Figure 1 (cartoon, rainbow, N blue to C red):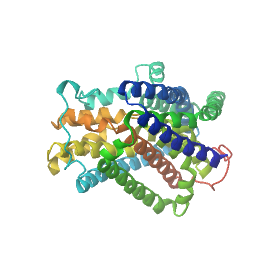
Figure 2: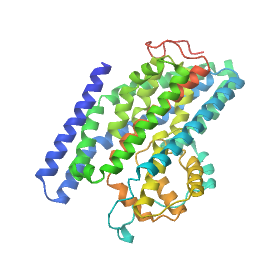
Figure 3: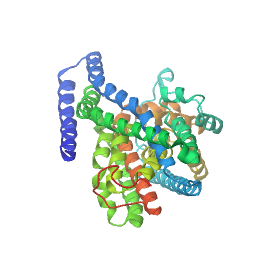
Figure 4: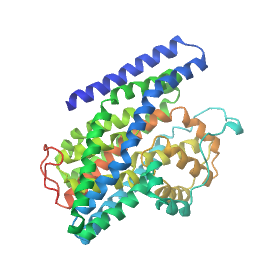
Length: 419
């Protein structure tokens, strides 16, 4: 069944490319192409709405159960510190590698595109992101509001507090823990139903982009797209290499198991779409439920490796396009700024554009340069979303190995002891 799902998604991608190319070649009116692309996008948007519908209760229930099953607070603190330590380390690697690769490849150095008009500079908000904004955004004014707006970072904060409360009360709330656990099982079952529509959504997403942009957009921005995907491939090699140091040869088993969620994230350009499947496959890999349910939701707020690499790569690409050189000190400052402002993007499509816009403003790089990457952002979003899934999967497996909570692979999710 697993391999069949992968086959359906791949076929849907290929069919989307063919249909999109035929539509783009056969229709010459730009307005008609935009309208047709909009019709294709209906299926994708509906699918992503279904995913967003289940993400809040799924993150809440799995994270609360994971914390409640941790046992003592000493262990909870140890796992939390190890998790955040890996996230910071992986973030630094992603940001540094992005700076290094864009500097070596210089994809924007020879770009000869005209500057857009000032009034059409960007459709993305460019207000600066400050430390105050980030800290205040961490804390939800209302958990209902956070869930209604799908604010993953705020849901994670509330879930951590709620889970700690459950763990502190122990046996007195045993029935409530069981109820939350049952909620998680129900949401996973609902996820299975939602995933049946994934191939249709994949077809529609690819067809919409190719219909409106055409295949030639890939040639126009070939150096930028190729350079970024080469950088992502390098990041994958580094992450799997680090995983090998801790997991040994089992890292190849992990790579095979996460193939489906990675492909789903790639084809829909959304890490969120792959969250439920990633959680399931990590449990199949042998990660205990309490560890996977704790580390993975945190990763979706604090460990978006692909998105962080894109922030440095795209920002410096725009600077190169305008012939702007940044000093080593400025690049170091950019790295530290993005370590903070990139947190909480939670894999939402195009959320990284807001972070890039704020970074451009901070370093006085023309914000109009954002237009240079908007046309191909969908193709780039596919790669960085898939990388986010890879990074979080490796992080979860590594933390499980450190905690000696990594059992044999091949079991059914939930089949192993939970405490």
